[in-house]
Length: 318
Image (cartoon, rainbow, N blue to C red; front, side, top):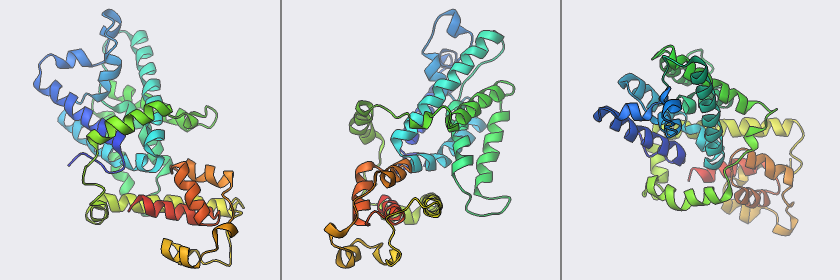
């Protein structure tokens, strides 16, 4: 089943839109000509093409690889959080569309753009930079994503090559610290609207009740959890090695207090626990956790950023 994907509502919505729009193109003769991006955007000012062309798959092989990649890249939304992930995709699509329009204006003939390349290839950059492989072998789980991406890049050359290149450039610019694009977030009112009115339409109504069972039965969910645990642990270890974890208590065995009941029974009294520092709060928020949850867990963990991160990750998968 392609969708829904638990913990990735934005990715679910994108796959759903691609499925519906591509189905319309396949079964309706003239629909493709109304949705793809080409010179007609200048000739008849059909500006809706700037949006609709991102969701059109025409070839079966292209659609198969595209949907697989969108499913694989759901780990990015689960790691970044939906709000930051939406901001990332929105900025990438705007950049890529600008490059496409500029290219069409200069070249003026022979090229059409369609397909979610402006979403897939920026995610490929993030996937390459942020997601560690599950093994150190030359051929590992990430090789599948790279192979599928290469197929998409070569599926309709030269147009697919241009399209993929623009997506890669957008993803690289997002990663560059100079532009600080990773600090841009979806406005609060829009995030609240999506949470209240769009999310309930696409999420699995049984996901909360079956959460633990799904994680055990679904291999992708297990892989996602392993990847997230490894990423969080690596980043928190780096912070600790750099001396950015003033709240850790070496006399305390962190493994003993992974269970909340044990922490309540044997942990220090609330008045004795260190208040969470803004530095540690920012560290965990940047890893994709919600600020209010971060503050609560840092208070419970005596401002120990490593232990709080592990607890937040465990709570995320309950």
